[in-house]
Image (tube, rainbow, N blue to C red; front, side, top):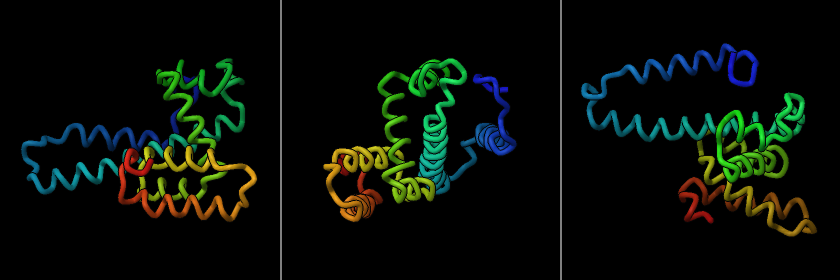
Length: 159
């Protein structure tokens, strides 16, 4: 069981076990080039895992599942169970909602490891701030332009 009372899926158990194998690896025997490759690849994996976490946060939020367990809101659940700060909880719910609704291409890019969650948050924020009267095609074009740049810029540069 996890902290929320549910069972971990077999997939999450396998991921947890794979991380344990990585943690047991003696880094002194890893050559520097391989270590640098690992660091870059692991960052992409972390972003992909966090992107999947956001996908699940978005589903929890859309279902109102946090209220069912008495948390009051998804943000309250994240603060109380995941022990994230209020600002992190808000950012997670806002980004997760955008990835589910208005930024599907961005969600796909995070899932593929093309961009990170930081870039996804910037894109979601920019798209959310566009005037609601803009045609959907214009919004999609804006997301695509941001995605084209996001693969080469860190979140601060993209913002």
